Length: 190
Image (cartoon, rainbow, N blue to C red; front, side, top):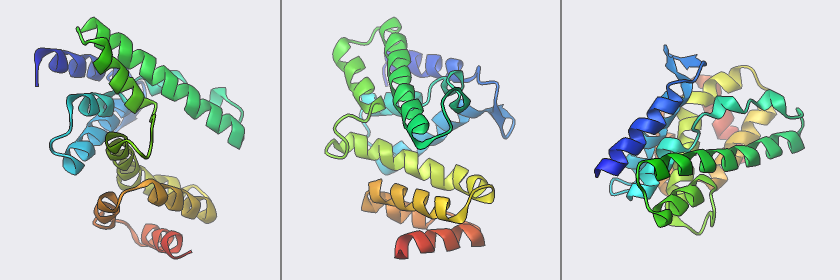
């Protein structure tokens, strides 16, 4: 990829390296960005530059807008998610401008961050597949350990409905524990 791409990735990673939350001894959002990028490239080895950029900045600086700042209701959760998408798009756009990207590329990355035209947009589908796979591979087990079973079955069902057949096939290859396998089986048969 070109120099602008390398600079953007370095800046996204520098921002996410500031995450005060850690996982496996690393800043959580940096690790998340790497995992999402890996899934996007695995699902679409010829992913466009905007798609690769969008994967790397999808959750940029997410810790700056904690869930606790919103009401602990479904409406509060949805508002938090909507505000986060806008925040990530604005933050990524500012960085992309600083490193020299044109407005068309910036708009495309932001449209992917905002999930515009999902599910009709093929690249948006790849990004959503990656997001779902990161959830299933790295977050599902820990969330399931502290959540109600019905909530988890519903979460899997919602993720599954958004995923393409290719992503579903990848999900079924993941190494799940006994409880997670049971929850997935319930979600897919209900």
